[in-house]
Each structure stands twice: as structure tokens, then as C-alpha cells.
Length: 419
Image 1 (cartoon, rainbow, N blue to C red):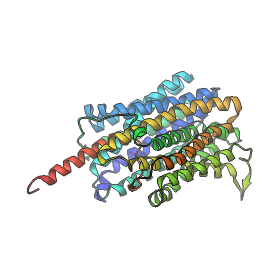
Image 2: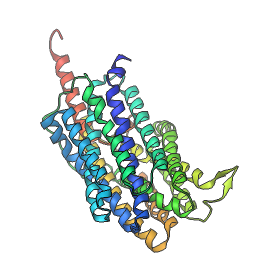
Image 3: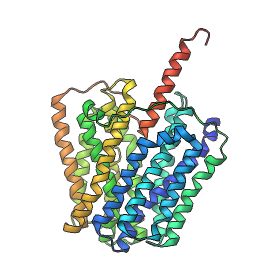
Image 4: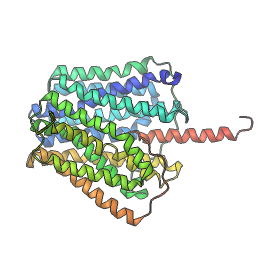
């Protein structure tokens, strides 16, 4: 409990970062549509965000090692605030894409140092519980971010200023914390295609996970508006998908530990593909027991798609040695971001040509491909001995390097006489 209190500043910063940047992504889609941006241009904004996110995962450790955790966080959060405030200055899709690269880079840096700080302070006995709390705070911030959208006016100065204020709040807890900053390793390895060599299935699955969540979170508001939802209802639509993802984490982990990872991945992909096919039908406005069917579908979308990244990461980890986890984690981030960068653009083009509901054809086709490849890999190679399923932090490339360093130090300390 004492450790949790001492790390409360990090958890509050996590909450505000997620509320700030988490609300920006769907709000940009809503604002872009209000300004007359085409669906392709709205997709371009999301691609810029995830492009910046990937760059942030790779290069932010250099800044952290140069300036330290607290000052690096203040720098990253400051850049994010600037990118948010700059939106109303020049309402142009290309300009917004550029500043979304900055916001994506910044949020990756913020999470890199928050999660590395948590990992460095946690002991093996409480690490699982601490990151369960962290995951709860993180996803609660995402729910609150989607709810915040309902109170905002699209494309207005005041709305973007309010989001920027929330992002500014993330700086205050870490600026006042007395928790000692952790030491950092000197180097961090990076081999982007390592995961494909370890497990082609996991690599493809992570690409599909990035494609699914990025398309829904970034271009999904266009679909919600097309079926007649207003701003507050669109926010509820996004909230229900996040809640669905939260609800499914525990049962997905339980299944992934008790059954073959491939079997669980196949089950979730089948459900996701079937759901996306249903969302392409004109049935979203139908009410069941007073609840509009579109909200049920959003909830089930979160249930079926959110756990796929962690399932794939757990499957890939079964085939590597412990000292290769850093290479695996960083490579998985690369594949996830690759899917997330490309998919909003493709989805925007599909919406422009065939209608908003057809964006789900892209996600469904991706899951069908994953299903077929999962069956093929089941015959190509037997399953390995399984490690325990765990939530995988979004910037685990840097975290894994710190864990590796801590394990090495622990082994060295235990080897010393009298220690």
C-alpha cells in the first residue's frame, strides 16, 4: 500500500495523459467531418498519430537517458499540449496530420517513462497487481476520454483548449512527486522484424489488432454519425467499445492459459469477423429491450478485438528465451503500429467510395485472413510450452530493457558472498 501511494503521481499522470490524447483521436475525426474533411483526410490524421507513436517508442528512450524521467515527461507532455492547441490555428488536414505526428510521438514518450518507472519500482511479488491497477487506471482514462467528447463542440477553440488543459494536468503530479527516478540501461536493442522470425502468426495477429483498433477508434465516429448518432451518442458508442475491451481481458487471459493460444486467437477472430459482417448490415438503429443495437455491437467489438494483441504477444513469447523478450516486444510494437498507420487511410477510402458501414469489411477481411493463417500454422508447427498470459504494456520495448537490466543486476547481487 505504501508503494502504491508513493506511485500515485504516476497513476494520476497516466489518467490525465489518456484523457487528453485519448479524447483527441476520435474528436479530431468528429471535428474533421464538421470542417468538411474527406474520409481519406480523416484517416490520414490517424495515420499521422500512429506514425508518430512508433517513432516515439523508438526514440524517446534517448531523450529519457539524456534528460531524466521527470524532465523528459515534461518535454513530451509540453509538445503534446502545443500540438493540441495548434489545431484551431489552421484547420487543414495536412497541417493537422503533421501536428498529430507530434502528439503521437509525445504520448509514446509519456507512456514509455511512466511504465518504465512503474516497472523499476515494482518488486516481483507485487508487479502483477501493480500493473493490474495501472491497466485499470489506463482504461478508465480511456472511458473518461470518450465521455469528455460529449461535452465538446467540434472544431472550436474552447474544445481544444479544454483538451490541452487536461493534458497539462498530467505534468503536475510528476512535477511534485518525491519518488526517486529509476536508473536506466545504457543501450536498447531494436530489430523490427524479429517477431516475424519467431512467430509469423503473432506478427500477423498484431498487425490485425492494430488495424482493428485504429480503424474503429479513429474512423469509427464517422460510422456512428452516419447511423444517426449525435455527439453525445457517438461518445457513448466509443465508451461501450472500451468497456467491452475491459470486460474481456480476464476471460481472454484465462482461456489463453488453459487452451492453445492458437485456438483462443481463432475463436476471437471468428467472433470479430462475424460481428463486423453484422455491422455492415442496416440494423444498427434497431432497438432490443430499449437499447439501440449499435451500442451492443460496439460493446461486442471491444470484447472480440481488444485482447488480440496480448494473446499474440503471449503466443510469441512461448517461443523465445527470456533474454530475447526486449527484441520481441519492440518488434511487436513495430507490427502493431504498421497496421495502425495504414488502416485508417484504407478505411477512409472505403467510406468515401462505398459508405461508412463498409469500413467494417476491411476489419472483417483482416480477421478472415488471420483465421486462415492460424489454421495453417497449427499444422506447420506444434505449440510450445506456454508462459502465463499477461497484459502487455503499449511501450514494452523500453520496459523490457529495464527488466532485463534489473534481472541481471539481481543475479549479480545474489552471486556476491554475504549479500
